[in-house]
Length: 251
Image (cartoon, rainbow, N blue to C red; front, side, top):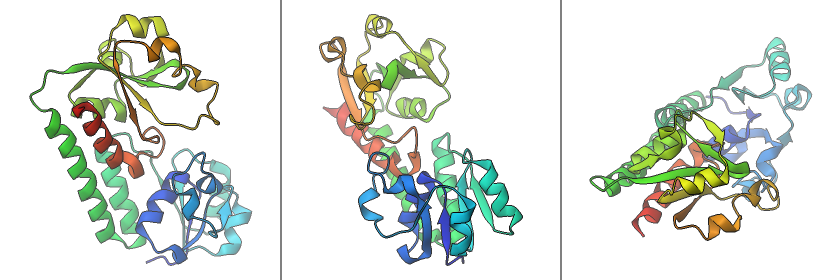
């Protein structure tokens, strides 16, 4: 079991924070200490931070270094050339991927029991979301993001909408992934529900002007606001998102 663990990835940081004792974390991403990006920023004070550079990591003598699928290649390759154990985890794209990643990471750090408890809780929350909407007439919805982007098929958000018994109007229009949609077209589709994620108004003031548009505030649909992070660090927020979506649709 590795006792000295380093992570170059904000999402992996958050999972490790749930799984391992604090003293085993010799370094985490600097982004994890920034409240603009991280829900655990206030908890990680005192943990050494890194910017994904090999020269920051090597002196710490970690037993294992975790990185994400899209983290910078050159520092990772340098760490590997120096004989360091680097484990790269893929970005989870489905609910099953999330469960698999939690268990995979836990096996690597020797914390299987904690991970199984996490997965069990997530699956319970997902099942409650699905059960709450079984048999109801499907409502139409858009999952709406900053800069006028709607989220279509092939995404975790689309999977969530299906579990919640919602018809994803973006997917029904043949949209895959993330697509811009004019506000006029969104309004003319007359969705029952508009789903938005919480975000930092300071960080996204211009991008989020779309979400504050008077036409949206005054439109004849229900706006459901969910915890931020599903598109980024899904594994750590997925249960809360499921519960909030269930509660919001029940009102």
